[in-house]
Image 1 (tube, helix red, strand yellow):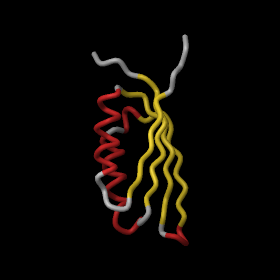
Image 2 (cartoon, one colour):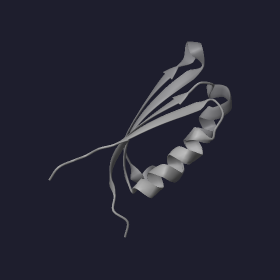
Image 3 (spheres, rainbow, N blue to C red):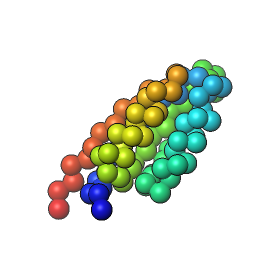
Length: 85
């Protein structure tokens, strides 16, 4: 079994009309690994920002961020948390 750890992700959708549903579909595929999700629609600018806390392996994080990063009008930034025991 792959080792999981916590990560944060900030997804910026610059055009909700064209990209929002694609982002939703990808996040739904990884919903078992999403610990927290907060979304802020910026309707007057047709943008949205989504904040996530994820618990997944580095490989799964790379796959998700790679898929999101390939979408037009979408930017993603991730950070892996260093939690000490």
